[in-house]
Image 1 (cartoon, rainbow, N blue to C red):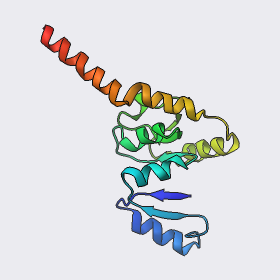
Image 2: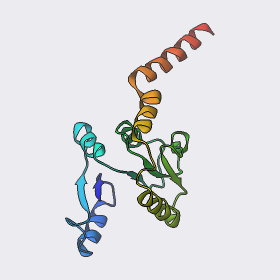
Image 3: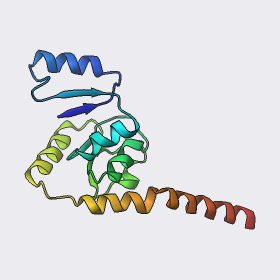
Image 4: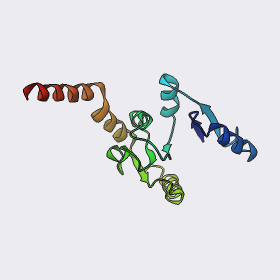
Length: 145
């Protein structure tokens, strides 16, 4: 498992992993990654996990989609608007049992998600062209009023 990021719990998670003898063998702490370094890591991922209590629609979910990577995330903020059964799985906030079941389901069914379909969703909804068209439509509608 590769953990990407440097949030407020980073040191505590790293210490726990070290204490349990997981670091280096089962768990790797990549730290904060951005731009090409993040894309390289996401492109090799099988799954992206966002188990958080406070999010809206984090860009890392959309970046995962762009790489064809499914997502397991908590149902917080606006995530549910862009995460359906073809893109991954939503679990309720702080429901560790539901989260664990989603992980087991993913591991038990490795071909469950279609990476090309996930990438297509990202392109169809969040590409530069699509965002540009959406903004253009808003401007045109505003000017016509």
